[in-house]
Amino acid sequence: MFRGYEEDELMENELIERRRKEKEELKEELKSYKELEKQGEKSYWLYCNIGGCLSRLEEMEEAVEYLLKAEAQNEYDENGWLSTQLAFNYKALKKYKLAIYYLKKSQKYGRDDYLIISEIGWNYSQLGNFQKAIEKYMLSIELGRDDYWIYSEMGLVYEKMGDYKKALNYYYGAKYHLNEDIWVNSHIAWCLERLGEIDRAFKSLLFVEEQGRDDVWLYSQIAWCYSKKFQHDKAIKSLDKAKEKGREDFWILCEYSWNYSMLKEYDKAIEFMEKAKKINSNDEWLLKQMKIVEKKIKENNNDEKSMEKE
Image (cartoon, rainbow, N blue to C red; front, side, top):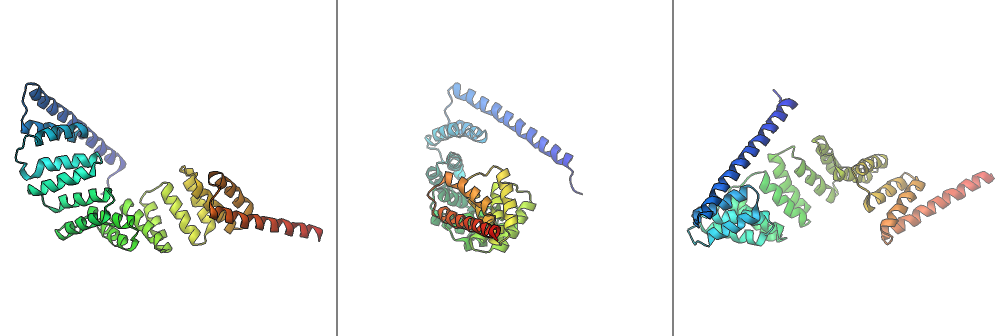
């Protein structure tokens, strides 16, 4: 049987309550550790526990302070726990070089598994070192990682590098694990469009819409595909949806003008071009299109005058 809305809501409320209780318990645990610190204890064990609690409470800056105090004790880092904790906190703080340093350090203490290697790769990707990221991701796959995360991350790195064919291969690998995932299907649509596979991109976008995506990006992409398919009426309707979601920039104004001009509704086209020109008066494409549309309007006006004389 399928769960009903009320059952889903009940489960969500239970999860929220469980997390609240866990947070309160963590705060109490932290309080007891801090009390030991006030009494003068300065042990490796204590600093690790304080740092661990703070990390789980998402107080990363303070967590790092205590974890570094633990590191200063020069105790053996069993199974790389301390190094891993420092790495994940630095990652959360967007200090990716330090995260990589401690992840590599954790490897020396035995945490040389595909999860750690994947994390090293992810941090390299955040630094823009895509080749290093790919090397680590590939090693992770060779060591047995075979899940949604690794394939979606590989796809994203190749997408950022502009290699949309390879990106697609890995996105489809991610889709195999989570077929209806909105994120990966959106990226599949994007890569297909970049490769000129408009019909396939369009199908992916409609699939994403069916799964519940309802935002500016989606309707902008659908409008773009409709325009490429010469379905300009439908493109305008999708642009309207993107506009309703808050898009009011140079791109959408140009798209309106293009689709209206293709429908030979030149008065509406020039109206949107004038608005776009207020945002960017030097865009070559816009200025060229304005001349074409203005010429068409003038020709239409002359034709109307000729007809009146007849």
